Length: 335
Image (cartoon, rainbow, N blue to C red):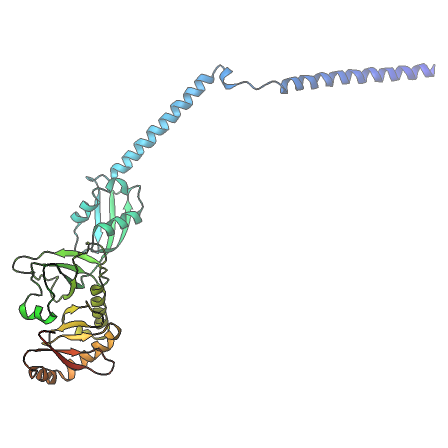
C-alpha cells in the first residue's frame, strides 16, 4: 500500500513536470519563431514610399535654404554695399582701396583676413602691413595699414643709348634729374619699389615727396617692377651707405646728393658741401663716412683750398677708403 502511494506521488510529480516542460517549451518555441523571422524590408512597408519622399523633400529644402543663406551673406559684401573703415593710410584713399578690392569683394566673406591683407600688399606698393577685420552684420571692413616711406630715388641709365660719365658731371651739367634716356623709381629703405616717376621734357619735377631725396645711379637696361625689391648691386650698396650714414652720421646724410655704387671698391658719393666726389669701399663704409664727416667739421676750408689749387685738366676726389686716413687724389679727364 505504501509502495503504491509513493508511485502515485512520483507519477503526479512527473505529470506536473511534463506540463511545465511542455508549457515553457511552447513559449520558447514561440519566442524562437518570432525572433527568427526576417525583418520587414523598407520597400515592403506600406508607408515606405511616403517616408522616402519626405526625406527627399527635406534634403532638397536644406540645399535650397543653404544656397539662399550663402547668397544673402555674400550679398552683404557686394560692391555696392561694402563700406570701408580705413586708418594708417597716407598715399591711398578709401576710394583707391575700394577700387582695388572691387574684384575680390565677392570672395572676401569666404576668404580669411590674412588672404585679404596679402592681396592688398600685393596690389598696392606702398602698403607694408595690413590688418583686416570683417563686420558681416555691419557690412563693413576695417582695414589698418602701415605704409612704406620713400627713402631714395633710383636713376636707371639706358646703357645702350648713353655712355657712362663721371658722377660730378651730372651735378655740374644739371642732368641728375633730367635725361631722355633715364628712368626714375622711388624706393623705400629695403629697396622695395614704390612707384615709377614720370619725367617730363623739362626734367623731373621735384615734388614735396622727392625733396631732399638721394639719387642712386644704376646702369642697367632691366627696369624693376613696381611692388618688388630692386635686386641690383648698385641699389644694395647705395642703400647700405645711406642707412649707415643715417645711423652713425645723421648730419652727413642730409648733405648726400648722389651715390654711384657700380664698383664696390670705388663707391662714389657727391656731397652738397664739397665740389668733388668722395670715394668709399664696401668693406670700410662706416670708417669712410666717419672720416668724411670729421673733414667737413674740422678741415673743410683747407680741403677747399687744396682743391682750388689742383692743376687744370685734373678732377680731384677725396679718397676715404682707408682705415686711418683720408687722401685728396686726382685724375685727368682721359682717365
